[in-house]
Image (tube, rainbow, N blue to C red; front, side):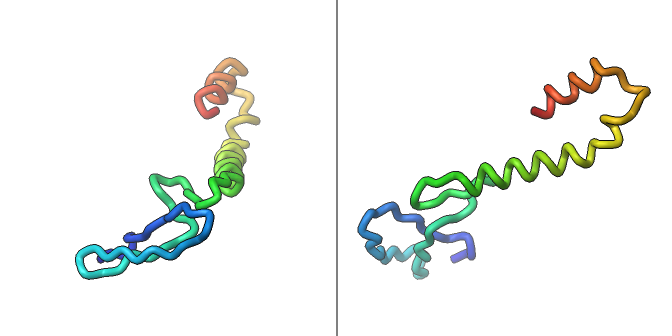
Length: 85
């Protein structure tokens, strides 16, 4: 069994399920990361949206020097902005 062997079970009664694969028991969790997105039992995506907004803000702040660069035209900056968003 690898450390990534987890089980997310959606049950309104929070019933514990015992599933064994290859001699190891799967851990039941409330949330986990799948393909870069956090998946939760309650389907709340607030944390995911906040995380993605923070990542976008970080990238835009890193581009501050480019936004202030007078040698780049406004058209070029707008194209870059549209490509990033």
